[in-house]
Length: 96
Image (cartoon, rainbow, N blue to C red; front, top):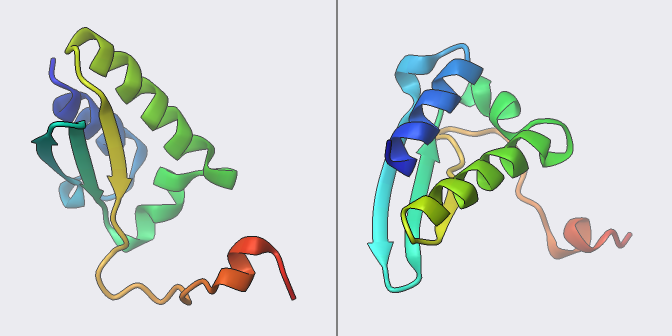
């Protein structure tokens, strides 16, 4: 099974709107990049508490990539029409 298919299957099992899951694959000299799009209501399930689910997905893809002799990276795209406020550098660095 290819890394794209594995990601699609796992994410569809996690979310409440599996029909909205879309995985696109692109390859370059750095490896394989998988871009994940999900329904806006399912973003929390894909990211997980403190990013734990996203980290686990990336770990799975890293292992699958080893069997394909490729470096596999995951990018989770922000859903269309997202109402999440943009993060400033201060938010990221924890400054006030």
